[in-house]
Image (tube, rainbow, N blue to C red; front, top):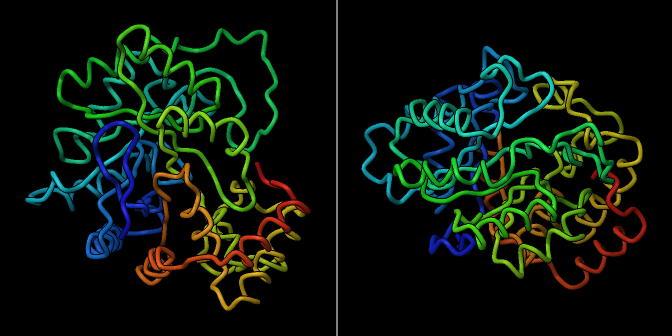
Amino acid sequence: MQFRPLGRTGLNVSLICLGTMTWGRQNSEADAHAQLDYALERGINFIDAAEMYPVPPGKETHGRTEECIGTWLKGRKDRDKIILATKAAARGRDFEWLRGGPRLDAKNINQALDGSLKRLQTDYVDLYQLHWPDRRTNTFGQLGYKHDANDNGGVPIEETLEALQGAIKAGKVRHIGTSNETPWGQMKFLRAAETKGLPRIASIQNAYNLLNRSFEIGNAEVTMREQVGLLAYSPLAMATLTGKYLNGAKPEGARLSLFTRFQRYTGAHAQPAIAAYVELAKKHGIDPGQMALAFVNSRDFVTSTIIGATSVAQLKSNIDSIDVKLSDEVLNGIEDIYKRTGSPCP
């Protein structure tokens, strides 16, 4: 396993992070424990969760993922060797069932954090992340920003950071990060930390993959110059980059076969790009999924690549991408496809 520094925290996290959002829905508690055991055997020390997991989120299911981690974590003697991350939900549509509509103010953050700690059966989390901005902005597939003059901007970033500062002082959180954030948002968080003595974000968790390289525009410069590491989620573009959904295929039990709400990487405009990447990988004798993961692993602004799996076999294949080194010929081939297709799924 390889390790990279998590921002300026002094922590080193595994280049592969174990994602968990299928646990409690597609995966049982026993499945989760098996994946956790295997991941640690392979050298992974970084686990990422969220209060709203598993996905798709729902009133009856939220928190199950953290509960699966908690029953595994309980009684372990190596908690200090595990870097555990989770997230608090922000304002959003169709989330009234969660705290009456989650916000990133002190009341909600404290309630969300205490709930996560109880389910995780731990006294603290190493990285506490804001799952998406409280303000209205371009996230989850919206590339261009469209200003909403009627939006009040959500809970002020300074207010959110003050609440997180309280959690840090209480010993419940070690470090903080953002998720689904923009360059403007990153800089606002960093400015508030610098000018007002508030906690500094260590990371940003955004989607990044061969079908969505929008992070490279703006956000990548911020992460490099400010030492805020990217935790890249959806590196396989919901497994579409494995090629298993090509030509209208609907594999039994696969996420996109089970849940029609996941459409981000399924549009007709994405299919030519996926087919081209799969063909390139096969031409060079590389597993298409491992090529996609190896590309993300190779980016200098990536701190950790968050992988998810519904079986230990899938997990092994994903972790094995750590040993795949892409030749200049393959990287040039990827860039040629990118020039033709761009980022079809922002």
